[in-house]
Length: 264
Image (cartoon, rainbow, N blue to C red):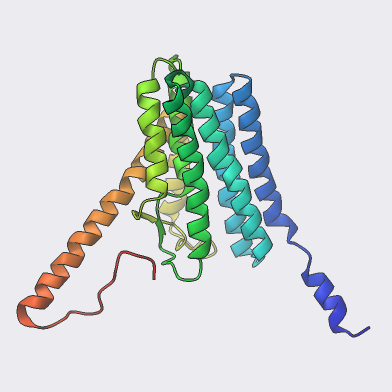
């Protein structure tokens, strides 16, 4: 047996730490489905937010510890379909959309299918996309839009039937934005290993206090604001691009390379 054979066997293993967080995200998504089946919609929404925290942690930990792997990427995508596609779609349907008949379950299915399509497109663009931006609303943020609305309405005593007219467009909006070409800031350029000013730590404390003051209202508001930021960023980039073209065409000079809206 050559020395290279044991090395090959070792390489076939998987990294435990990031995949533990992915498993936790998958568990939270499945738990949200179980809570939905028991008509415990507030617990289902909270479980989906826990899944989002764990999903964000696994990627960060993998990058910080240099434990990225093809297995981890595929496992993360499969877990995301459950936690951020099936779970919010099913919760929205059982909570509010079931009373709308066929339109209700079609809207829930559209959200779930959009999640799978969003993830498939993301995986095929890993090597070419601009890491500063996501193309389309990330599926955890879309799930936060639906789960946040469910949590907020439930916390203020509204039933799903009473707000079905709002639940339908919010569910459809989340699905549409996921498969759109709108650009969303990815926050991947944040340096978590370097030194930061003292004000940064203070800002984190203030954010925690703000969320703790009214979790459903703050989290839904943050999800809604982030969802709206994509179309705004895209429109601003389009206007800048057109301005550069007008300026370059007016005197025959170009100020530099033009950057398109699509991934590089």
